[in-house]
Image 1 (tube, rainbow, N blue to C red):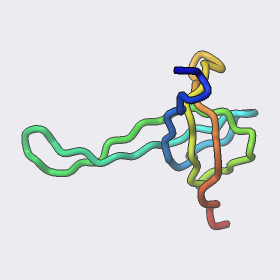
Image 2: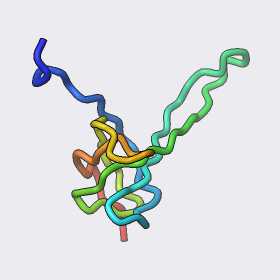
Image 3: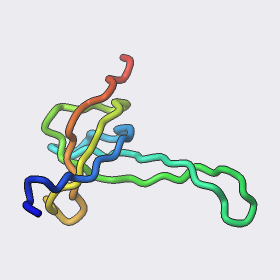
Image 4: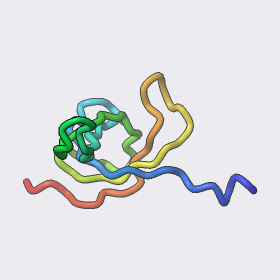
Amino acid sequence: MSDNSKQARTLEGRVISNKMEKTVTVLIERQVQHPLLGKIVRRSTKLHAQNDLGANEGDVVRIAECRPLSKTKHHRVVEIVTRAEA
């Protein structure tokens, strides 16, 4: 199996901060079932991603895993799915 056929894992989330130079903070939300109660609860994860496409706060973006770019950043913005309403 060659490296070219290996597909990077992608996630979709909302940009909650673009205050850094080339980095955005993306909130990934997922719904899981509570182990004891059985109720569906919302869980979230915040990830830092390299922003070369100019994503702004409120945009829904698709991010992909990549090599570590800094201490906390190991994803990059692949595409902007929807822009935030101004």
